[in-house]
Length: 200
Image 1 (tube, rainbow, N blue to C red):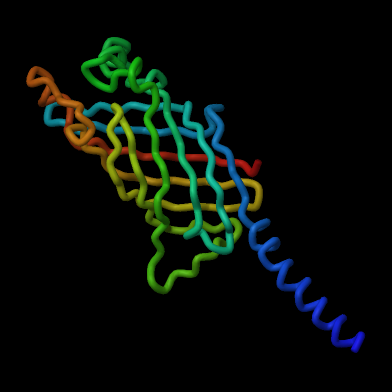
Image 2: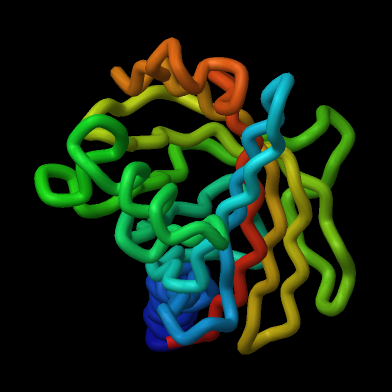
């Protein structure tokens, strides 16, 4: 009888340990506004190509390397940190006619889904780039819209390197380009991010 009780106890203990192990595998990684991560946008208009950057990206994400489809996270970029190598243009960009930094101080990206190919393994391999597609909610000028980003993830235990590209449409975020600069500012903006996240 004692042998049966001991066997049952061992089985119960093992079952209880499984959730703890899988939960421990999920790690929170932080992106700090320390200059190691950056966001870049490109406006390719008929008369001018404008490139803007910010190195003040911050945020966090929770990743289980055994199953990256469970990844959650969000990031933000302060509007006042955007730089286009033209002070007057930066002032206009941050003003109430454009991104309105006073009312909506941050641009946000929230991960809503990580998409893999049908034959792709959900597991990350340490030190190797992994192609992914990420559905997200992009918020600028107080307006949120879904976007699809394509990129790579590289995991090496204590660090994640994430590179991704997606397109933002200014009109979708109630940013209207004045007719006087319509040939100099594109409605479709190409956005790319290069993020370094470190285990908390």
